[in-house]
Image (cartoon, rainbow, N blue to C red; front, top):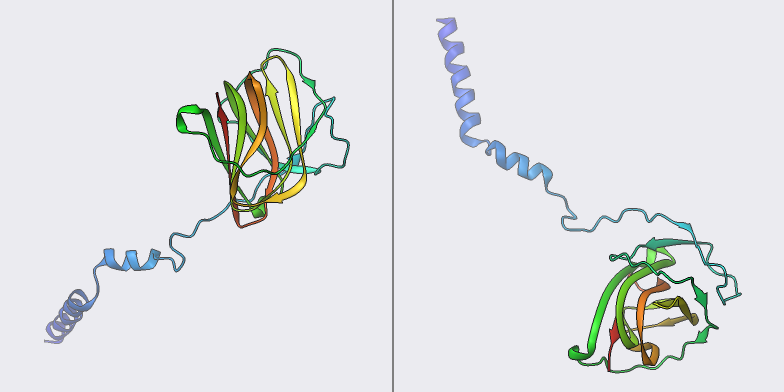
Length: 201
């Protein structure tokens, strides 16, 4: 009799657990729900020493360390690099040329926590002007435009901060083959998006 009573009690407890307890799958789902679901987790940026080639025309103190963003497209420059005298950049908002005139474009996003970012773009296309579109706010140090003949034109932004807009980065009306573009900048807003365009006549 005693065993029968214990068996009935055990069965009743088991029945109650199965009836009223939520399914195990639901318990697991509940356990993994995070209050900040969807939040972007940023990995610490890896900083490295800023490298400038021999002959670089800027003589002021440049940032010691940067986050390097390699070009998505690797482009080799066969000719020896020769730096031309730097040109001072003049801020002038312009309209972006029509899509028929744009021969190349690429975008890089930078974050305020990264500090200075050394962004590199593999172009390898011909045109007559480069444009820079900024979404957010960013401080620019310099840009390097390397051409197929080995000449490198440095555009000096002189650490100016610029906001939303499209600007002429460099004009070469005679038409040239651009190999690479390098921009040293840091975001002054939470995030900033930099888009570089190459246009033709």
